[in-house]
Image 1 (cartoon, rainbow, N blue to C red):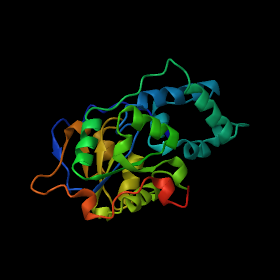
Image 2: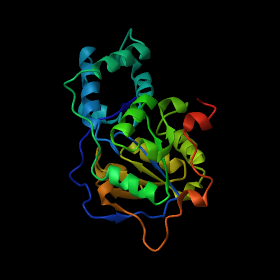
Image 3: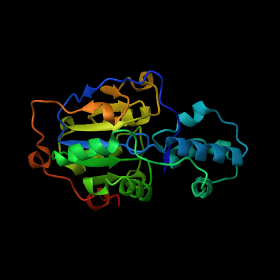
Image 4: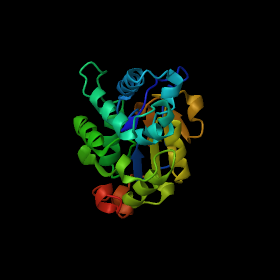
Length: 254
């Protein structure tokens, strides 16, 4: 599952920005990048800590953003004595069924921008710390599932963000060289993973201040503020090997 929770910083950029390269492929993060699900996730993690009587701060929870739940819980196991990671994840899933959680929907510009890329021939992929089921559900909900030929979820990698494994796998499945693939992220862990994989990274200030995302190549408020370079045609899959169906079919990790 993805772990998350923060609000956009007051220093979020407002102007339009052009991508530093014309991509043949794009890899999106999901939560906080395409989907406004961070307030919901923040509340779920708050409920978890409160249920165990564990002190916590917003700063602690913000450190989880963009990372796999199992990775975070493994590092914090001493805070939950007597409870296994599986026990804690089961409790989290029970909280996710509550009907009083904040609603989830697309972030500004996300659907239109993804469609613009796909319609122009750019291959789209997803690299998320969330489960495959959550990713499939949310992409379907916002009408984009058929635009994504590659989907790398938490179960498709052995090490989650900030490790670059997920982005390296996604890039391989897209079939394009790293220098022609752009990643979109909202969290420092995701930015670090994308850059370590050799990708150009655009960071959105939907969950973090711009100053926390300084290692990205470009920082924007959200996807409605991104523009494609002019003067170069969108060649997309015709210039590469094309996207595979998804990470499970193209990877031995399953």
